[in-house]
Length: 120
Image 1 (spheres, rainbow, N blue to C red):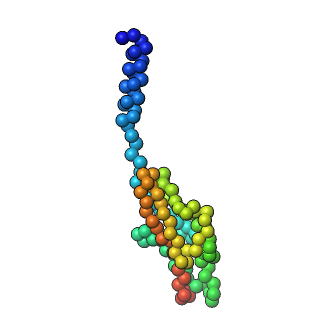
Image 2 (cartoon, rainbow, N blue to C red; image 1 turned 90 degrees about the horizontal axis):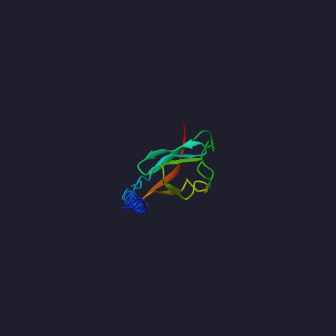
Image 3 (cartoon, rainbow, N blue to C red; image 1 turned 180 degrees about the vertical axis):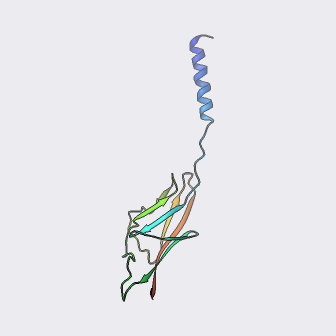
C-alpha cells in the first residue's frame, strides 16, 4: 500500500466513524420563569398566573396594561418561544406561549394576570 492509499483509507475510516456519532437533540421544551412588568408569575403545571390585589380604590399596582410584552422569559436551553417575547399581548384574557424543543417537540403554556377585587 502506498502512502496515498494509506491516507485515503485513514480519511475514509475517520469520516465513517464520525458520521456514526450523531448527537441526540434535546426534547426539553419548558418555561422556567415568566415576568411581566418586573413581576414574576407563579407556575402551576403548564400555566403561569399572577393575582393582583387592589391596593387602593381603583389602584391595581403592577397589573399589566394591555397589551404589554413580557419583561423577562427564561426557557430551556436550545429551545425557542412563539410568539417572540417582544410581542405585546393581553395577559388579562390569557396569553398562550409555545415552546419548541431542539428536536421539534412542543409544549404550550398559558399566562394569565387576574384581578383580585378585594383590598389586601
